[in-house]
Image (cartoon, rainbow, N blue to C red; front, side):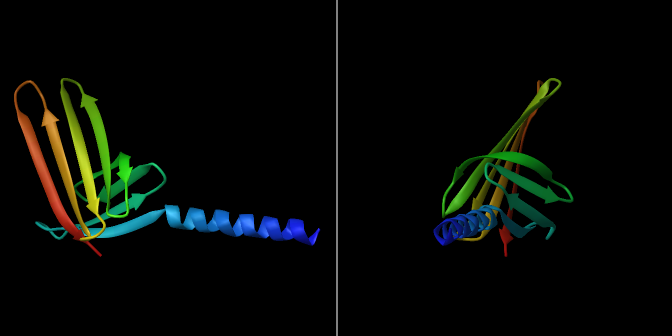
Length: 115
């Protein structure tokens, strides 16, 4: 009976530590406006929250050095792709948005640093 309790306790500790470590949050600020931007990372999604930019992104790669995530959308005749790179070594982020429509293509780049 004691052996079963010990296995259950080890399993529970392992499960709780995995949950705690898999969810991360980064508080960052834009270089151009000093706006606070929050990144929240779950298992396979990255959530971005800020005053001027927000969204949900699918994580393509997650390494010790950084995270690469993408969001693709189509609204009417316009389409767009947003790519986020969080550099965990340098504690910086880059968001690139490309909006494509029949009249004009627009590329926007936002950079900043994280704490």
